[in-house]
Image (cartoon, rainbow, N blue to C red; front, side, top):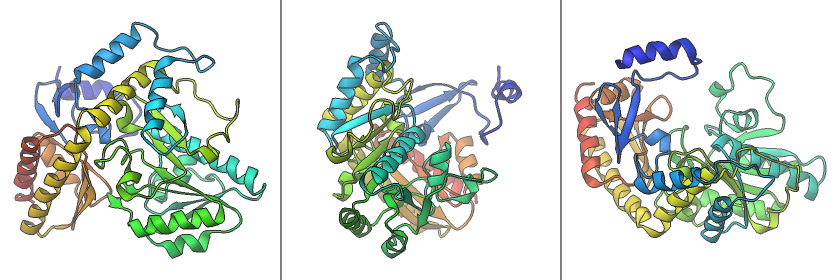
Length: 396
């Protein structure tokens, strides 16, 4: 069957919540994917920063197979070994003390929002429940996460949203400070805004937020769902800045393609949740945690972080050369293998033309193209991607 035949079948039975490209992808190896018709694509989207070890990673597949042959699920009413081991790896390689496992980035954000509310009421009283987030941010699609998201286009027709969320200007400390009151329990932001256009935070902005939160006893919470787990060349994005939060939310690349999310907190706040305060049926799933162990091992012990730093620098260099040649590219920004180029025109047509020529890209807002390839990408694949992109840029 062709792509279009499968698409026709899918449109009959799957809700129309995505503007999908006309491809039915069936298999992959390394940084490449194939569709049902056998056409090969260089994957610089990686499931939107999810397939951290690429496609068909043998170690990851073996670990999942071995765990599934033992036990796939047992409920959090009991302990399972992979969850403990994955948690130990996260804690031993971070400044955090304990972890809550869930299944997605939105769930990890929900856990952080709940923890913040628990903290505010316990430490400052019933009046302390407001959470400050950033304009142009993106935190997920559940009600709490979409309320925290500072983009009204994602909130259309969903009112009334959750009460107690205030929006400040990203990288503008004074705009945050003006919103802080005795009602404020937490400040939540992405160290690098993803859907908002690949916009890194200024280190000075984060330092001032850290000092403010220390002074006012407010939780500083990072959404590292997209920018964490090696994407910046560091295990966590906060390490790239040297400014640590109290709470962090993770997902996407943590499972290398297998669904998993995590929320971690430093010791001072890691025991705010007690039995019954929060839960997730599939959180800490043995298979998902086995996948996370493989990803974390590769990042920490097998040189993947060094590859991200090296290839990220090379990708940035190639993108800057394009910027010098093509005036429609107005900016290049990002960190590691989370890079973006801003154009003076909408990028949807450019992305579609690149896909037709065998390069999978994804936008980040109307005028930004995002580059988030698997963390195993090499120089040759970057050259191939840039050459395809340049072929398209010559046509627009």
